[in-house]
Length: 283
Image (cartoon, rainbow, N blue to C red):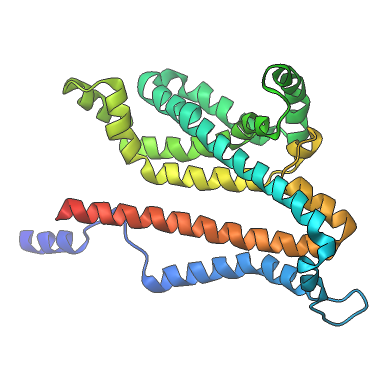
């Protein structure tokens, strides 16, 4: 009887995590691509529609016409501003938000509940209300830092803060950062060395996800930039749509495709570096 119980126990071994099969993974990715592709297909279909009926490639030919030179100049300045805002917002998240989340999780666990409410507030507050509160602050900042478009990075850092917090906090809970910090300090490591050599490398995947999410938020934000009278990629696209809706949809389609490709390439590069490093460790 004891042998039968042992065999039954061996056969009923519980596995904490079972990897999904390749067929299931391929099905999920296929459904995701189909859902993601429907808006792009609709936009592409619209760009070939003629205003008088039927199909035409004349809208795409207008991209290279001499009459669109001014539009491209305006769009170029908006694109440069948006890319600058992406870089500055990511820098703010790296330098301020992520270290603050790690510090509170490790050093001040009693403040975590209040911190969670504070970090998630930007999701609950509409963008228009945020602008009403940020407008006086930006008027003061303009006296010291100027009224350049780059100052929007402070507002975008607040908007991206909830997504940064949920991503980093979940990873910190999974790796038990407080125990790792105590173990490192018991071996003589300083706080900065523990942060740079132990905690940050363990958060590499979540930090790369935060980078992609922040870039997508900044490139797609329109309300705050428009109400604060700043020029970005989205405000330029709206201005173009008022004169030529087909050209606006074509440019939006190109920007979306380039953005998706760039995000997938960055995520693929990060996954490749992680695999190469894990391979070096096993060797």
